[in-house]
Image 1 (tube, helix red, strand yellow):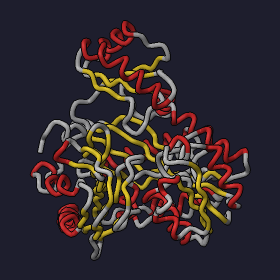
Image 2: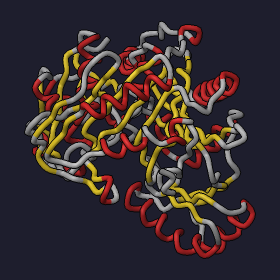
Image 3: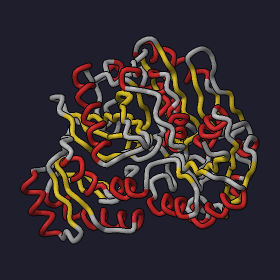
Image 4: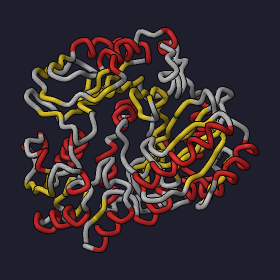
Length: 446
């Protein structure tokens, strides 16, 4: 096991990684931009290094600065968390070349999974179900129209190097495709440095269900069942729960086996998530593979009792995984609400500012993962996530009741948050019945 871990991230995930390191007896190094000098995780790390100005591009995304911070602080491993450089092949390779352990998959796996079109092809070869579609580096308007006509509308246009919900458009006819194609290419070029796109058949009322994977460097791969992530807006998740109200034991087994099969096929060796689309007939299709720890990982932790970040760190240190598939048992139901600094009544407008009051909920079966405190400045430079409120109940009905009370107890003043949105959601009859899909929020279904 390495001795000192540099946490190449900020916010709640930085604290989450720090706590896992403490459990393993590891020292920690925190990095920060000048805008994050008062960040909560910096109070607890063993060493801290400023890596640049407020701009992410000059700090948290600056590989040279982060490698330098690891060198001057004596770190021998780097945990990227999620977002920023977590799925950067270049960053993972730079860590390797500078004698640092990258707590994540290999650069080769990141290169494959980071290219959504090639990842799709690899999954198809491994026998994982995929939706009909095609990718092309030089797909022009006439070629896209021809492919879309063959697939049948609606069609999803997606950046081949995309992720995080960026570089995606659903089109319902030829006219929409002509308008959307240059927009997707421009967004893909801006966000991912490539205009390469792919088209695939779009499912109208699909659910977003993902399977958590754990793999080590000795060839052991297991899954930790599914998470339901269909409550989202503009491809950004708002609430997650586990297990999914739409997945039967038989379907769970098939999806889990497919996810493991795909991970084995690409030689995956860390924590990761296989994301699927689930249609109304119970058919599932590969969407993408997230080669990192996910924002919503706590719901899996609460129903399995497995500390995913600790296991990820152990796997990166070349320890054989102590867990086997038979050890993974579902216990109860967990729900996570993302508490963002956004005004639900004004179209989810971000609301940066000073938190004047911060009083999180407590009690049995309630977990709050956050980096905020009273007086904290919510910066406009970064993601609007303030906290993840996670609860655990004996079943879904009890988990919903616990979550509703926890939301009522969560007092935040100074910035608007999504607490009113979640309270309304948890009272909706369709949500209570588990009857929703990925476009449900956008279509004003509640």
